[in-house]
Length: 229
Length: 238
Image 1: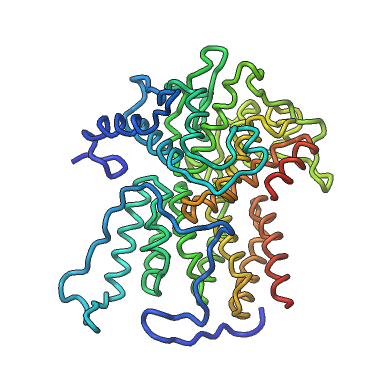
Image 2 (image 1 turned 45 degrees about the vertical axis):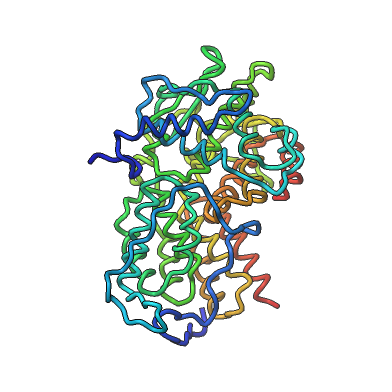
């Protein structure tokens, strides 16, 4: 990988040279959902300075609020919670750092929990640290079963193969979500960002997980196609 | 206070009743639960079905219309489809293992969905859970020989001439009863449902639609009959 990743720091709330990643799905729309959303925790009075009557939330409190939200949503098992696309749509540097740290604490068997964090971070890839995290994700050791990632399911037999449909996606879920997030950078004008994404994808191509390496091939082709223009 | 899914345990039975009332269509009642199904599992299932019931769509592909009989993705209509087939949820190991979430056993009862604890204990995406129980509901159709899976062909090769193996087991799939030779069987229904949610759901979140794509694309590969697979791919514009 040649060239350096260079980003201009514009301020505490916006570290981007490019906007956050576009919607992950071509048909993504504003969510309404049906979940009974709980309001985010408000910062304590006087926690931040005021400008024009609007309180600024210190970065660490914002990160804490957003992490609290994620925990609520993961505990509810409701992936259609509208707050995933509203309060958790844009993450600043402090929140991203918090989420990356929390990711490591989640048991690897909790595939959806880990994948949800990758999804949220994947919509906010703007700097080298974000790409480094995605690279760590795609380089993780394969999860061999939902009971214990370190061991394959002991009771497998041929008659159960019918019920294995989708299980490969589940076991590789965080990695596939990472790749999907990188694919969404295809329309991004930041060449350095796309170059970094291709580096991560290149690593994923060597994954021992078949679904991951196959998807990496597909993502690489699409990213390179948009890079040549 | 003990909680599950952030809900006080004592409230769960009240909520299950409330959820059930929202799922009742004009013609079919919402499924009931055998008392052996733990309250937490009941809540999870009813939450998932309530989500299905809430779905709205801007259209649907031809195979969706063929399978579900509706011109657009529509939650209550999907629940009507499901409620016609599944009347009761009950507990069973479904052969054991930590990957099986649900099954049906038409030889015993054509309208019961058997659920394992994996349904709630495994941290899997919600839309995948939903697609599993819709897949299983397809197997209850006695009039269609339960859309039984067929043995994968021998040899079972991909487009590059390589053996197709079970993604998890690594074992060759040739000869295993884990393929479909029709685009409208259980795997086909699952793929069609997922891909239409991905493409046409207007009130699904971005994560749900991303998950629907990941699992929908993967399910299409269970179609061993190439003609059926191409029909599905064309319909779903994979």
